[in-house]
Length: 435
Image (spheres, rainbow, N blue to C red):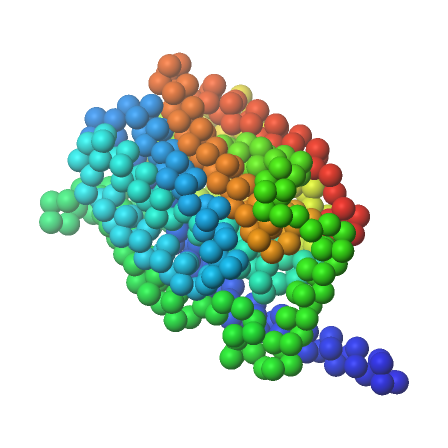
C-alpha cells in the first residue's frame, strides 16, 4: 500500500469514527427534545376527548384553536434559523425549549374559548424555530450524503411521540388529582419536561464541530474539512443570497408541497382520536392505544425510506411516493368509515406516508443552497408550510361541523397530499447533489 492509499484509508477510519461519535452524542438528545416538543404540540387532540365537552367547544372552535398554534409558529421561523446559522444553536434552542414548556403547562389552566386561542397562539410563538433550527443544526454536523439518514433518525421522534404519547395521554386523562380534570393534567404533566430540558440543552449541546471537545482533533478536522468542501462545491455551481433563495423556483415549490403535507399531518393527528372515538365508542384509553398504530407504521416506513433515499442518492421520488401513500390511505379510509377495522388499516397506510416523506424532503433545500441562504430558505419553507397546520385542523373541523360527518374532511386531506406529491415532482434536481 503506497502513501496515498494509506492516507485515504486513515481518513476513512477517522471519518467513520467521527460520524459514529457525532451520531451517538447528538442524535439521542435531539430525538428526545423533539419527542417532548411534538407531544406538547399535538396532545390537544387527546385532551379534546374531554376538553371540548367541559368548555362547550364545537368542532369548528376546536379546529381553529388547534390550528392557531401555527400562526404564532409562523412569525419567528426565518429569524430563528438565521440565529442558529449565525449565532448560537445551543443558546437559541435552550430558549425555545424552556419557554414552550412554560406555555404548555399554562394550557392546563384555560377556562374559555379566548384563553384557548391565546394559549395555543403563544405556544406556537414559543416553539417557533425549533424544528427548522434543528434541520440547520444537523447541516453543521452531517455531510450531504449522511444527512437524510440523520434527518430520518431525528424524525423518528414524530412517530415515537405519538406511539408513546398516545397511551400516556390516555392514562393521564383518567386521573383527577386535587379536583382538577384529567385533560388539564395532560397539558401540565407533559409540559414540565420541556422546562427542565431547556436548562439541560444550554450545557449539553455544542454549536460547531470546532468547539467539540468530545471529538479528537483529527475527527474535528475531518468533519470540518468535509463540510467546507461541500460548501465550496455548491458555491462553484451557484451562490445565492437570502433574497434570491426566497425567489428560487425550487424553494417556492417546496414551500407549497410542505403546506400540503403539513395540512395532512395535523388534520390527521389532531382529529384522529376524535374520529376513532366517534367510529368505535371505545374508552379514551382504548382510543389512545388504537391511535398509536398508524404512527408505528410511520416509524418503520420513515427509517426504510430514509435509508433507501441515501442509498440511491435520490430525494424527489421517495418524497412523492410517500405523499401518494397518504393520498390513497386517506381516500380509502374515507370510503370505509363505517368499518372501524378497515378504517384503521387504511389510516396505517396514510400514517406510513405521513412520516416517510420527511427524510428525503428535508435533504432537498441543502442540495442547492448553502449557509445563510439554506438556513433562511429552510425557515421559509417550514414557516409557510406550517400554516397548513392551521388549514388542516380548521377545515376538517369546519367541514365536520357543516356536514356532521368526517367523510368530506378526510377526502380534503387526501387531495392535499396528492397536490403535495405533484409539487415535489416539479422540483428541478441537480445531478450532482440530489439524484
